[in-house]
Length: 396
Image (cartoon, rainbow, N blue to C red; front, side):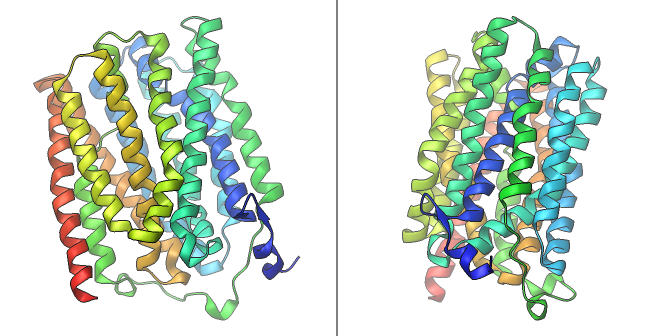
């Protein structure tokens, strides 16, 4: 089948690759969120402190994140994305059930780090595939669909974790064992359904240098860094929910609320960004985040915390996919793997100091401190993002 015919073939109004990349992310996120929804409580059950819970996630994400830029750059140079996706998703599928045999936080860190290596390998090439398979006028919609599928898995995963814990109370290891199934199905989806649309050799970039990217790209990365410094692991939000009296059994359902709202609004947010500008959606998302984190710091009311998790889903829908669409707007087509990889690396690397700061503030200062810090950083990023938007308006 020719590349042209592949691009014409659609599923539910979406390009073939967009749809099946979404299916893959749905299945893989089902696996990872089955684990993520219970990991903070599991870690504390084997002796981890709140600082260690936050630190493990930060180390795992940040130290593997440099691979996101390297794999993105490599995929640009050879003009292929699928091999990186197969390897990256396979690592996650194979390693996830190994959490069932750990006995210490250090062992969790080792497996979590190695599993995140898989994410580092696949993320840049996958986002490049999505950008390259999307029409210019529907890029926000396509990234929004991918985010919606990602978070659909994040709905099903906690639901499955809840179901397993309902049948086997307190048996976190059983959840880890069963998490392998959807992850392996996700790998099969890539192997059999994702089509590699090879680029013409003459279009492939040679040596890629920092000067190849525009100044607005780097300005946006600085804003993302500042925001992410206050955007520590979501595990602390789950710890907060448990601390105010929400039972461990229901923690996966609280996380489900967040992901459900994100799924509902991800595609509409992407479409809005296509029509009215991505910067406006991101400004809204950052400001909403600032309000949400301030609320987490202030309240000890269960109903308010549940409402904040719902609003957190709205923030996610307004920013995650839209930011990737904006990055792909700012850079050349043949360097999207590299540009998106660097963007994802910045977020992942910054998660380490963000998680250390949040964990120490939670344990050593006050349980409200990390949320106030996150709120302040988000407000700063909101102001900078508004300036970024105004500068574009003046130029045009």
